[in-house]
Length: 224
Length: 224
Length: 39
Image (cartoon, rainbow over all chains, first blue to last red; front, side):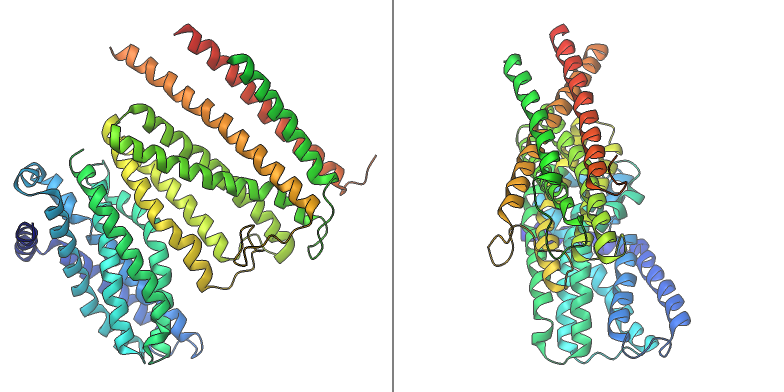
């Protein structure tokens, strides 16, 4: 099972390195928005007291909408290239889900690795609790990738999947987004880990619940 | 069977008429609210309650569909979702009117308002998904999977997010202290109204299911 | 004639809306029963 999942992940990574479609879409989207935001706001436009809240919200809006532009590809491209059938025969559903999920985690991680430091530099965002922020990003990545992978599996079987992905993901991811923004604001304000703990707990349990239900739902969607 | 039903339906009619009358003339004016605005609670709370019940019925029907692939279960799920959408819109409107009277604006992004807005988005996404899948069985499967996924993320919205933010919303009936703070005549009317609205939901639900079933049969007759 | 902003009018409007919904559903119920008998 683990071997199969790793094989799916390796296949995804190889084909992504060859074409770089998803990575390009996500990164360019994120960078364009970031530049637009940074150009308009810069490090000094926002009042000191509004800073923690507004910048946390901006950061996650950039990350979230960039992510929605590329995360659906893992399943949509299989349907487009008519390779889904082969994949169904080649690997067990659990392995397919795990591999695609891991790929989306990698994709999101790369996005964050590029965007978050740039965001901090361009907008002068000082984060006091660096460890808290890193933990939040990690938990948020897992949760967002879980939701996005599952929704991608659903919409790849429907028509007009491009717009549908955002429509279906936003209501599911909004609670997550609220908790992430809240947690990021707390991390920026205080160096203590306890500040981000309530948000972190919520995010981790959301990720857990989504992953557990995906284990049951994915095979159903995959073999409909 | 039909005679019983007729009796029940007329009973429901009389019951609801009595509730409407009692809401305005039997229940006393609530203290701490502007004018008579608190009377909206006799309609707002039952509507929200029915929206939640519809969401649960939808979940049960969806799970049953995923297990047995009975087209009737898909019809049940869709009917419950349709009514859930209707009643959450009604609850939103009545809540919004109350907000205008009490707090001076129709909408101020109170946590409760956020959660009902996201509930509406979930329903909208559910129907968008249904419309994007032409095949009956696949539509049922994907919609049911999405409904289950939406249901598991809902608790975070309803219970976690309002805890993080401060809310203007009056305490819900089942509040944190586990105690009901309400004048007894008001409580009688409220419970009567909840019962009446639940009955109304049951009737509308059966109508909607039977209507969809009749349509399905006609389509099958025309097709085969 | 009661005051324009009195509760009486709110109650009257509520009851009218409710009776409308009720009659509509009743008609639907009748039609459905006929349809189900016909099939």
